[in-house]
Length: 143
Image (cartoon, rainbow, N blue to C red; front, side, top):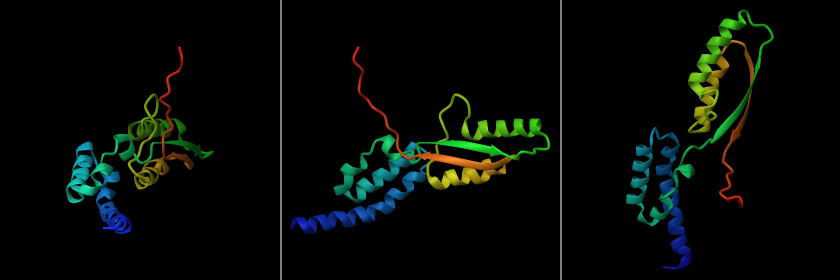
């Protein structure tokens, strides 16, 4: 078998396995991720070395977001609606000392914006910055 034909064969297997990897972004828990990777390993043993992705590489797709909310100038009862909005946001995206909002996929984040943030009274505009990868250096500082 020539190098070109083996490369084509491997490329065809990668394309076929891509459909099996697609559910990783929507996996509910780590056991689902493991089951999906095991299915790919068993069906395509040539691709087994590529199924050993670290947890940070597999999930989450969106590492974090930064949101700026702009409110309406006129709110009928800012104290009542503000308290309700604050409790709802703390429940859904964890304000305070917790990590930023983490979504499994852009589609899930869009649903969060439409179903939670934009339904709050007094929210006129949402500006979002999405972090797709985390830059983290492991270099130790000299003592």
